[in-house]
Amino acid sequence: MWILIRKEILAYLLTLRLSAALIFTITLVVMTTFIGSLDYSQRMKSYYKEAKQISENLDNATTYRQVYPNIAVRPKPLSIFGRGVDRSIGSMLYISTSYIPTSPSWHGGTNDSHLMKILIPIDFTMVVTLLLSFLAVALGFDNICGERERGTLKQILTNGISRNHIVLAKLLGGILTLTIPLTIGLVFALLILMANPDISFSPNDWVRLGIFYILSCLFLSQIFSWSFMVSCFTRNSSTSLIICLFTWLIGSVVYINVLPSYSRHAVEEEPVQLFRNRNDDNWAAYERQMEEWEKKNPSPGEAYLKGIQHGGYLRYAHPKGYEWLQKRNAYSIERLMEFAEKRYKALWAHQVAFAHQAFLVDRWSILSPYTNYRTLTYQLARTTLDDKFYLVKLGHRYRQTFIDYLRGRNAFSSRRWFSDDPEDQEPMILHPGEVTPKMLTADAPFMKERMVWVQDQEKKAERDPRRKLDLSGLPRFDITSERSLAQSLIVMTSGLIVLVLTLGLSILISMYRFQKYDPS
Image (cartoon, rainbow, N blue to C red):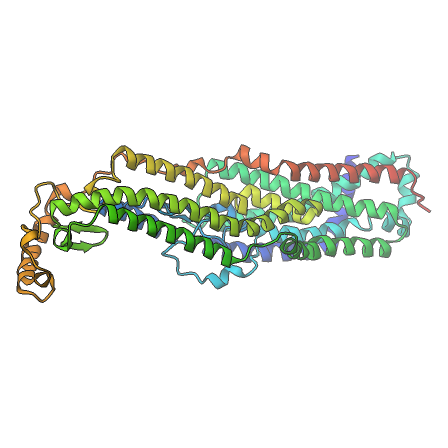
């Protein structure tokens, strides 16, 4: 049997089909990987810039209101092989008491054009899906019927070789041949990526990369065995070629483009105006609540609240004014968190239709080997929309941990929420009851005198260590809590089952059909 396998491999190696496919594969892989490598470096630059900005903001925070432990997600190296939606959806989660994210946002420091992100990315997965799958069709469509036309099939059968052995030898020979351009292309891709200092693969990434290679081999085996099966049912190679090319065109080109269009009509979208109306109603309700609270708890007056506001903090207000602001903030923040919850639900009700459209594409992709393979590689690379939403769920969990941390420090009812003034800080206006509204105008002599005092206090504040906010106990987001390999494989289970079953079924049908095939 090994002699037959070697014969098939040598025959394929001498064909122009394989040589041309090998040249095209290497060329496309080098181009796409090089572009992907440059793109990854740009994304890493944006990631480092944003992560540095987040860290600096936390270090410079002097009030709890300035604390935003946002999450910048590091780009995944495997996204170069299977980009999915990793390039078209942001990788930043904003964490705030008054905001709940529905999806990742863009890095604030990126210089990329969002319009460029709508272009269809060409990656290693697409090269395998289109080019190498076409090679699998080209190698398999005339395996049996072509041998019959040339008269060599009859000669092979006269040697007393088992028909099952012939089928297995031809299948293994073709599959092993297909791994040659796949392996060479992957090696070239890895050499390019390893030359980029911004790219480093973790042990988990290497395991996923190994599974990606096996997955690609199974996919090409699936396409080749299907083409081989067609050749077992036809009498001439031209008929087999038409059938194989038609199914390749439908499965790899038409279905990939029709599926998203179908999903848009299959899921009803909620008008965006409904979200806007709900959001406006919720905000109006919040404002009414605050107005009612202020009626019951009137402000002590402008003079008591007079100070300087800058960068999320208030300084030099009167203690009585601070006392009123503490009560107001404690009530306001709770209401804002309620508003954030309502806004999230309203926005999600609007966006869920678009999410369901994408999920519908992933679910129905299982019907085509081409879309199934593409979806499996994206799931393995963790670049699907579902992976983005998984990250959002982790962000929600971390936001709640952050809120619990603030509650534990009584931050909502503390002066430190909005001011970094020490308890013994002299107020800007010592006797607010003696100050008239005219004296509080910016050009009044009284205020000019107090602003000179403020400038002197600001110099002292720069050297006052008490103004620095202690965030040593702030919980950090655990980026390693992203979807594990085991979780990814669970998500991939249905697609893997279909891939293996269709591969095995096409082989069994080929063996069964060849038993009755007339070589004459």
